[in-house]
Image (cartoon, rainbow, N blue to C red; front, side, top):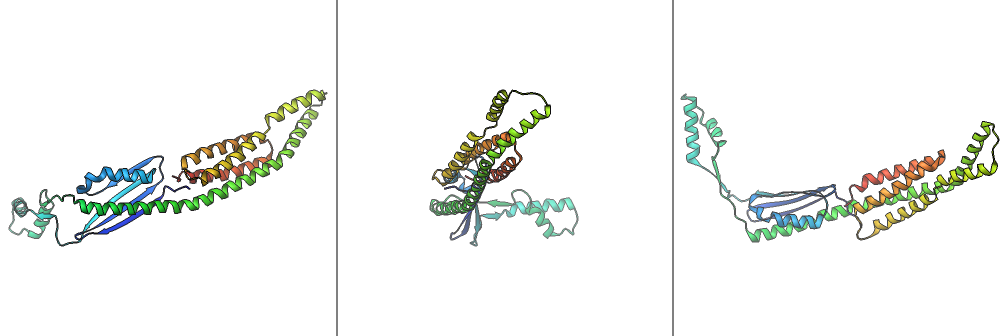
Length: 288
């Protein structure tokens, strides 16, 4: 079973004084690229969160965020009255007029350093236990999203492998005509030279030339690779990297067949196979 690397998961936890929103987003990447954004008072739990995400998501560009919205009347920030008054007085001295607008001075003073003091919130283990449970919920959501996303990819892969197999059958059907076409062209080229030829020697050279153009091995290997791709796709340990290696082997056999084809109708079938394979290559980059 394959999974996509594209996914999204979310969980919302309502606590007595705050609402905690957990979001996980992921896109495709060669390795695990993990970006974790959490409030400072949860920072000591960041390592365990990273391990949990790495175990569950394995690979991809992953953005994990915890957003906290205070819902109670209490606030952890207070105004430093003395500091703000000092700032306002200093600003009046700078202006040196008796008509200074206190509202405007207050706005300026509130932007100054230390105008607000924030009490550091300590980590509540019981609260974190609830948040951790919701992290698990968000992870389950994103994993399910990845599985659902991969289902459409799997259908597309199977269709394109079927198409490549159909074009391979065309190549097999055209192989006899191709050989005859090569013989005819070589014979005509010799005849156009208007020279006497040794028929036995000509047959020997023709056999040698046709052996170099023989694609029987490529046809067999390509068919085997297509079977192996579908077998791997259906296996429990299926993964994008392994499927990518098989796709490389499929491409190698298609390219070799094309270089040996030397016959326009067969080359058209090869081009169609390459087109189907390119579509698979693009999509395989998003498979976990």
